[in-house]
Length: 142
Picture 1 (cartoon, rainbow, N blue to C red):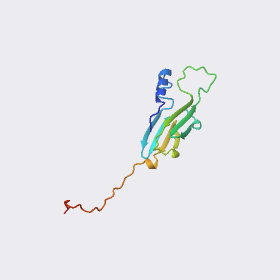
Picture 2: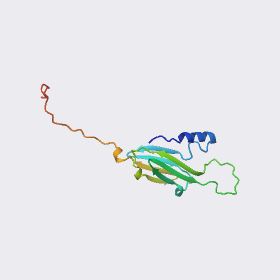
Picture 3: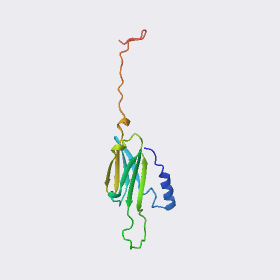
Picture 4: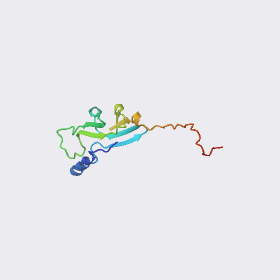
């Protein structure tokens, strides 16, 4: 996986607007487990029906929506939880099989499993041994 070019923009926004954007509104972890890359996004308070995951040309896009205050007549005293529409893009390496992405949403965590493409998996190469004739003057094994 390549780095996220929007990371610096997220950091800058966090610096300018404070804690609401610090670390991004959709924090993510990614790691490799066996023959798959696992990507987890924290989406607490998001309705799973509002989550959209797409892949186009090795760009994974996750969109989600978290509603704002439920009571429009209430006087807001503190509003630190980000709400609205969120989008996160992740650039995937070409070695991943983007046709077989699996997604699961459990307790506010969206987990994506992206298999490594067969052609990119490491494989053992058999080494052939030829029966070459002994070279004249070379010592013979006893």
